[in-house]
Image (cartoon, rainbow, N blue to C red):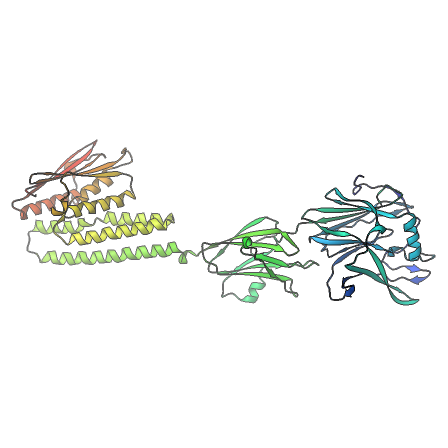
Length: 579
């Protein structure tokens, strides 16, 4: 048997007289007719339950077989197309129901109340029963075009033992009388979203479809809402009256929203349809924990509140209707932090504050050193050399470059390396302050300080270095002028290594020959004119320090030799009678 849902077939009408549908008023033998009102009640222990809530869809049209769909939520947009009476010929009676919940019950009703009245006489239930016996009605059921019930006579079905159906008969000649209708139980059905159920009805002596009942479970997604942000200082009434700040009326499987951590957000839902759909929501869908929100009966609004969430987190919110829990609308809310309260702003303020304090301390110490130096009775050259020595111990370029490096890391949101770099710079600065107070330190300390400096510079510039020690393990016993090598190493890194330098490399060698100590620094960068060293350059400061030390150390001679070419620069320090 083919499915005749969309096939319009002309059939010979049964011999029924004209009648009135229950939705209209007419006359019978000159008396007014009151429309009937179907009543469905649930049976509990064979007794009707007056307090049990029941939803039902009752379908009636002229000459069509009556049925009732119990506990089904029907969408208001359902389109129904009853058959037409045309000169005694009939089209199939088509009924279209769009429901949103999952399970429901279908019963055929008998006697068929549409046959009660005519212009000349009143059909009795007995007469209707005779007509059904002579030409009984059959039905078949299809689920998604697959037959699940072959043709079967309606009157052979079991009576519904869960629900009782009837109506009140009202005429001017008698008091209202309750008429019980037999519920021929078609079955209890469960539909997934987008599933459809078709019930076809025909007379046993005809192959044409007499009536077609189409039921489809349509998807209902909770995707229309207002998303409103506000601060705790805003007026509550003004907030509730505020229109949506964004349009969220489109049906989308997922939605990306943003809000600020210092503010509050409302998701406002408005269900103005005739069917109140209870909303369920979950902030952790995987846990299976769902909560219900019931709309305000006076305004139809429902609300979900998000109160000042932590910055940086992503809130996952799942929404659905309790009538259709399969259709889940997922929302992702990214919480953004105000820049003034962000960790990056706090880190920047902390770093800048620390650097400002250090700069203030440095200037104070510099002034103290200046006052002390002015009290000395040294020669003009010695005083100038010491002032330049103090200034050269901490090159301002290093401080500025360190600030730029920290700012670079903060802009990249690399908090871990920013904190590590600040810690290393702080350690290096403390080392400089400690060694600056001493006239001599061990060669081992000097090399460690220079290694720390080169490691810091490697974070900003790409180069390699190596340290070659040919003097054994007793470097801790060898005294050495603090930070004497630093200006030479800095010149190699910042002036010798350029973008054109291939594999920039720096090599520091320590050699001991009897009582002579040799320290050489070699780089493979671009060379420079050693005769054009400008005043105040780091090399000039080193030379003045060596002259000053040679004046004080009568039996010890310190010399510095520089060789520079396109292949690189070699700087050698010789310490005579040093060991």
